[in-house]
Length: 83
Image 1 (tube, helix red, strand yellow):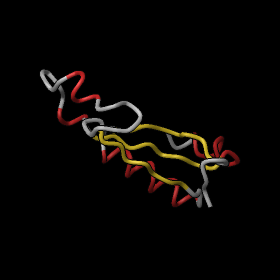
Image 2: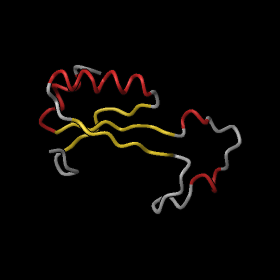
Image 3: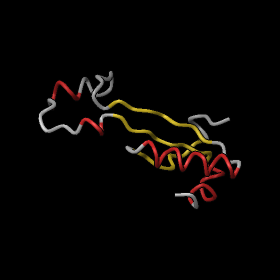
């Protein structure tokens, strides 16, 4: 089981196809992973609404969402082969 205490960030993707390719390769290799999806346009308790502060003029809408792929610290070296 991957927890915040035993995980490390492997990669960040704005492209769903590239993320899916990495996750498929990790699954074939038997490496456990987890994915966190982040909406940059959504207000957050930590950043107090970046959209309100910076606006949306010239904002690239295709980069509103991104995915962070995490693996166990023990699997980090093996997982990096698939990047």
